[in-house]
Length: 128
Ligand SMILES: [Mg+2]
Image 1 (spheres, rainbow, N blue to C red):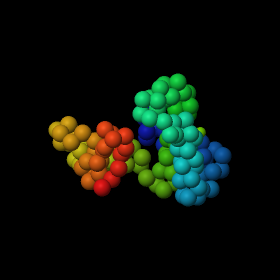
Image 2: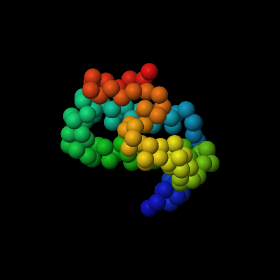
Image 3: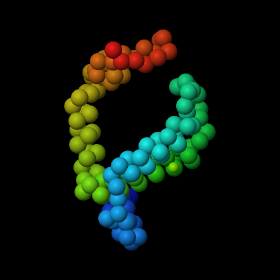
């Protein structure tokens, strides 16, 4: 199932339950934040290496987070009449333009292009 099919299926899911015009933009954003908070609880306050370990050990919860969040994003796309597949293609085109591979290999992390510094040697990431 691709993004277009998923978006259509979620529209049908909502319509079958009479939820197609029962929505609130802010509440959907809060739902997405809640899902992010659930995932964040897995890895908060641990370093990069420990995060990778936790993610491997909690693959099912990570998968649930991705599924739940994609469901909410596609629901948001339906309710705002946005073609999610096109939105993602537009974003990828923009990122390809802003972060060309040859430039990124030179600077490393995208934060450096945005004016920030990635000070991993001193144990922190910070913006200037
Ligand atoms: Mg969840």
